[in-house]
View (cartoon, rainbow, N blue to C red):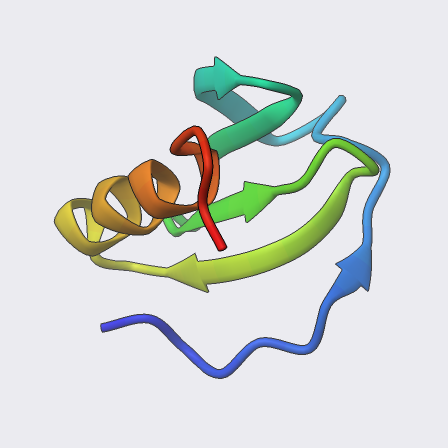
Length: 69
C-alpha cells in the first residue's frame, strides 16, 4: 500500500538510502535503517513512499514509463 504523500524536497539520498533503480532521472530507494521505500523525481522531490516493495516497483514503472500522461 502506498502511503499518502506530500511531495517533499529531499537531499537525494546521500545518507541512509540504497538506490535500487534509476530511470530518466527518477530513483527508487530503500532506507537502510527503516527498510521503507521512496520514489524521487529528477528534482529529488519525494513522489511516493511505502513499506511494500512490490507496490513501489509498480509505482516506479508508472512514473518512469515513456509517454505517461
